[in-house]
Length: 319
Image: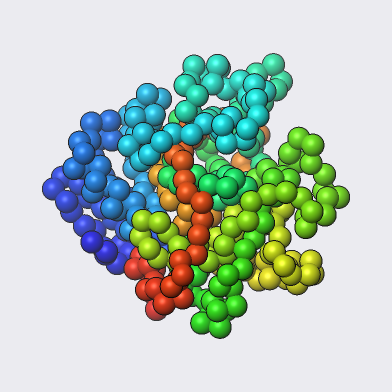
């Protein structure tokens, strides 16, 4: 099914245009509210192939988003993932939303934020990488979009792995990164956390740097998030140096797609195989997106990882 970036494919009434980047495809000619099992099967294959699917101009209500996320797997709420009461987030009451949906917004009520992530920059990360089993499919529905800013960038972690030298792959094989939950992706401290903590002593799950995808069987770099990370077994200075090197490599522009949001967009991405970040935008502009996600797996490195073929979506010769 693989097509070169920009080469349009047709499946009946459905049109698929791979984006001119290392990942992503824009899908048109489908109403996500009414798809049957066969159509979803096709979309799921495209999702695994392109890592990210963008659907423009969808007429979606929140119950449609919940229905879509359930097709991808078992929905999981932010409260369950954080293992704490999130009653400070009032957006679900403000927008009358079910618990499966999280609101990413800068809207305030009575001077207080009702949702998450505000209007500032959101740094590179994969969602819930500080959990034993980070989320798998993740999706956003754009309800209100500011006139400028707030774009979201995604990077292809298959491509980042496949572009490593054989020597670096051998070096990384068997290595793990501890993911401590110290700051959020807006760089705000978590409750009870401190920047003075010794990252080597902070609890958190450890995930392999070389991560094998449970459905495609291809390898990815798994970095999670930069802050609160530690390469197990290395002296702190060496761990920091290796993390800096891997992050600079993985978010290189040749692996990145930038999504410029429009109202009605639905973007679904593979959180296991990507990292993403968001630009800041003007505080006086309203931005409202609904988010949902499904349960994932505990990352692993396959015993034969170093001999596995690259994921076909990225062409190093074209980068």
